Image 1 (cartoon, rainbow, N blue to C red):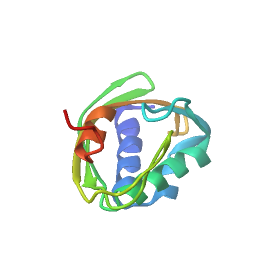
Image 2: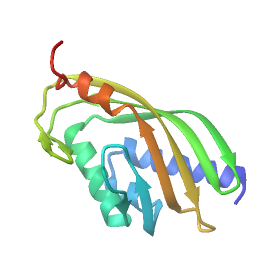
Image 3: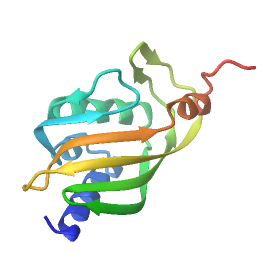
Image 4: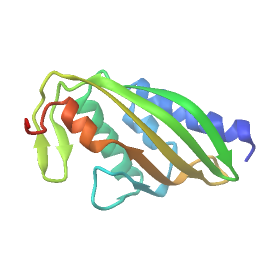
Length: 144
């Protein structure tokens, strides 16, 4: 795919998140996509798992907003910087159970590497962001 087609596909996913449309976000992934996310010990597998992950994020941060920084493309892979902002107003799903809402605002920077198929769907993704910083911002980290 061309650079403009891949960056457009990437932008479509971000637009879906910012519209708080988990189903539209998941539709930008292949049915058998695999997503590696630092919050989870095992990769998310399949469009349904990816949609559920977004449902959980939007439940925890109902005002979630992604902004995208620099995008780079190498073949079928797009790498992008992002910032997630929002307010922790709902429970946050985590591997060890839910984290209750704190009402605190968060701003978390990260990067994502998305590999696309010929149809413009993400087939594999690796997300990188500061999980410890996110937890600290919602004030779960113990005081030192």
